[in-house]
Each structure stands twice: as C-alpha cells, then as structure tokens.
Amino acid sequence: MTVLPGAFRDAIAAEFLKVRTLRSTWAFLGGGVAASLLGALILFMLVRAYDAAGPADRLRYETADPTVVTMPFVMFFIGAIGAMLVTSEFGTRSIGPSLLAVPQRRTLIGAKATVAGLIGLTGGAVFALFAFADARLLLGNRPAPINPWPQWTDAIPTVLCSTLIVTVTTVVAMGLGALLRSTAGTLTTLGSLVLVAPIFAHFLPTVWQLRLASVLLPNLTPQLAGGNHPYLLSPGGAGAVAAGYVLLALGAGALAFRRRDTA
Amino acid sequence: MEHMIELVELTKRYGSTLAVDGLSFEVRPGVVTGFLGPNGAGKSTTMRMMLGLHRPTSGRALVGGRRYDEIRHPLHEVGAVLDADAAHPGRTAFVHLACLARSNGISRARVHTVLEQVGLSNVADKRVGGFSLGMRQRLGIAGALLGDPGVVILDEPVNGLDAAGIRWIRSTLRALAAQGRTVLLSSHLMSEMAVTVDRVLIIGKGRLIEDTSVAEMRDRFERDVLVRTPRAAALTTVITRLGATVTTTGDGDLIAVGVDAPAIGDAAAAAGIPVHGLTPRSATLEDVYLQMTDEAAEYRASTEGIAR
Image 1 (cartoon, rainbow over the protein chains, first blue to last red):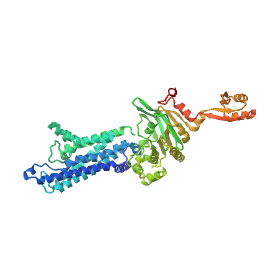
Image 2 (spheres, rainbow over the protein chains, first blue to last red):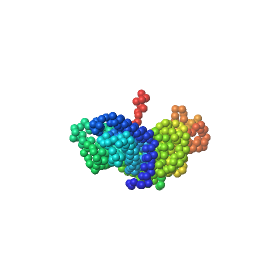
Image 3 (tube, chains in turn blue, purple):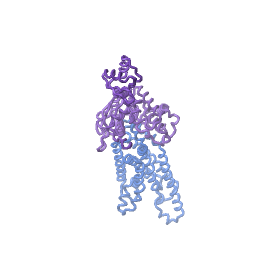
Image 4 (cartoon, chains in turn green, orange):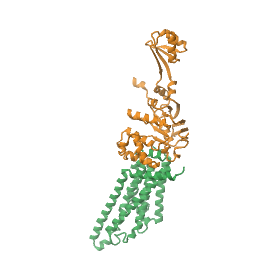
C-alpha cells in the first residue's frame, strides 16, 4: 500500500475542514487565550509589586518569564485540539464515514498527524509571541533578573523552542487519541503529562525530582533553548527526548489505528 | 466485472467465536440484492470487511476486483451507509458531507446536489444532532451518493423508519439498481426484503444458506391448492386421477398437493363439476425464511413456555 500524494493532500484538506468545524476547537483556543491573558495579569501584578519594592528587594525577584506560566496551559489546550482530531470521530462514530472516504489508514492517520503538527506550530507560535509581547510591554527596560530578556533578541530561543514543544505536544496528543480513542481518557492523560506531572515531581526526593522534571514536556523548552535553567539535559538531549515523545505516542497511536477493527 | 462485489472464503473470528465462516458469493449490478439473516448472523461484520473497516481473519472481499482499501478516492466507486448515527452531531448536514467530499476531491456543488436528491436542502445548515432518524438515514444515503458510485451498500437501512421513509428508501434503491448499479442491503426482516429486492443472500451463523431470487423462493415453496366445491367426493376422484393427493378440511373443502390450480380447474370443467373456489397457497416468504434460518439463529425464544 502506497501513500498517494493526491489522496494525501485531499485527506489533509478534509481534516482541516473537520477541525475548523468542531466547536471544541474554538473552545480550546479560547482556553489558550484565557490562560495567556491570566499570565499577562499575573505579570502585571508582579511588575507593580516590583516597582513598589526597594532596590535590595528588587534583586531578590525571580525571572518573570511569562512562558513558564502560560505555555503549559497552551500546550494542554492546543494539544487537546490535536487529540480531538481523532477522539471526536471515535466518540461520535463518524470515524466510520471517515474511513470509508479514506480507507488507507496510513494516509488518514498521516493526514491527522500533519494537521495536528500544523495546528501545534501555528498555535504555539501565536501564543509564544503573545507571551513575548506582553513581557516586552509590561517589563519594558527593567533589568535582569526580573526581566528575562533585557534585549528582545534574547527571547528568540525561548519563543522558537516554546513553539516547537507545543507542536510536539499536539502531535503526541493526536497519537494518544489514536491509541486511547476516548476523549476523556486522552485529555486526562494529556493533562497529567503537561500540568499534573510537573507538580507531582516536586514531591519527589531532590535527585529524582530533577531527573523526572528534566524529561517532562513543559520543561523541555528551557533545556532546548539552553541558557539558565535548573534541569539536567543539554539542548541536544532535550531534542532527543522530544523526538522520543513523538516517536512513542505517534508510533503507538498509528499502530493501534492500523491494526484494530474500527466502527 | 467492474461493479461487482465478490467474496471468496471470507472468514472472521473473534477469539473463539466464528462470526463469518468461509462466506463466498457474488453481488451483481442491475438488481437489488438483499443480504438476510437473523440478528448475529454476521451480516454487519461481513459488510464491514467488504469496506475495509474490519480485517478478515482469512479469505477476501473484493469490490470491482480490488480490496476496498486499495481504492483511491473510493467514494467515486462505492457508497455505503453502515450506521445512520455516524455523523458528528455538532456539524451541519452540509459541512458533514463537505468534509467527506473534500477528502475525495468532490465539489461543494455536488454536496448541494445530493442534499437536494435526498430532500434535505432546507435543513442543509442545521446541525445533525437535531435530526430525526429518518433525516439521518437520508443524510447517510446522501453521503453514499456523493461520488455517484457504481456500488451502493446499506446496512439495515429501514430500521426505525416510518412508512414514508421506508417507501422512499425502497424506490431510491430500485431506481439506483435500474441505473445499472450494484445495490446490496442487509436486513433481518424478510417481509421488507420481499417487496424491495430481486435477489436474496441468506446467511446464518456466518455461513451462506441460500443464494436465490425472491421469485424462485416463492415458487419453490408453493405448497398446495385449496379447492371449494359442492361435489367434494366426485372432485376428489378427478384430482386423484391427476396424480395428486387430496385431503378434506373440517369445512368440507379439499386440499390438493402435487398439482397446480389450472390443472384442477380444467379437470373439473371437463368432468362438469362446479368449482366455487380455487386458491393456490404458498408458504409466506417469512415462513420460508424462518424455516431456513431456524437452526442458524443464535437465539430463538421458546413460545411454548410463554403460552403456558
């Protein structure tokens, strides 16, 4: 069975139409916007407190990188859109007509993965740039350590790597969806990966805390970007772990999708 | 043949259950073929294997000489409805069809055409979640017609429909077959099949029991002729001379087996015996079907226990 370029292109176009016409897509985007606005509000309050503090106190402020606060939520919400590409079809049994229209399962799952990747890339870039813009706007010329990016060019690695990790997360979520088929199960797993696990890591002994935290999706961003962070991986190592996530989730999802009887 | 469906020793096993057991048959174009069997006989599983949704354990199912999942843009060749509820309830009828159309390079104009064809144009922009079962069946059929396919496959299309809906499906299917398409529909109701299909494939416990025409089935199970006459004894002698066996009912009527009604009429006329009634009686198709599938039915309720 070969993947036919024309059929593949049509399948991608159909998947885009499907995702655009799902109400949940817009609800999850709204979630991403809300998380970003909340992040901006927190930063705004932090800057006000900073301005009211004395010079000695100001030095004790930690770096106010808004991506640290907002991007895990963005990863969840954009990732959920990727998951829904598959689980919404299993949940409503519309996977049947979809497979009748595109019976080559590799083509269908490939089209869904491509669309998930493009949504992750676009969504990741938009929300990372939003976080960057509100940091520039609210922090202005304030110095380090509160200002993570005294020069705007300092933010480039963080914005790029945030975008990449959101893309990775969205493809991983799509793969999980193909594996688990259920929306509830997939979103719970996704939430555990990007929101709950980082909190859980804090309760481990310090050595294990660092080891676990270093391989969690949200923490791959700073490790991939290099610079100052408490984690263990080099940018290359973080890239390898990110690739591992994609290979594992997408591979298992695609395998399950191709092997199991459907509808 | 281009639009033929062909099954060769198709088998599907789920664990220790043999759902479909070496099924072989052909479905030809130009007629409506009914795929019949009691609940659990393996009809849906067979159709799902034809359409690549389930993998056969062994054997093969070919549509137009190819496996379904080898067909590029298959909606142009095969249209199928397996489940009337298989549309996202949040999408409109138009968008649901547009998504399918887009994946097969079919234009949006064609979506409008099929919506018109099934009578859903006025609700094209309404969400599918608010549709009645009849409307969803029509939407499913619109989806099957999108690519103007040569083969149409429907699983239990009349289930839950009202009389008008059933009549619509029936005339639509007959029209599709008259256009030279291959039409296959499944049902567990013989009574429905008798008025819709030309050929029947009957399966039970995953095996083919019968592959025949409705007319032949009717002929084969013609049973006897009921004869009403004021001169029963004389007519009995005449009919017996024709080589038939005759019994008398409690009302004094005769039941002749082994001879047809015209022969009895002719012999009675020649002998000058008046005949007041002459009724050929055949088993209803329903009876025949139940008789054929009785052994194969997975669950058959005992009426004796209930009657007591």
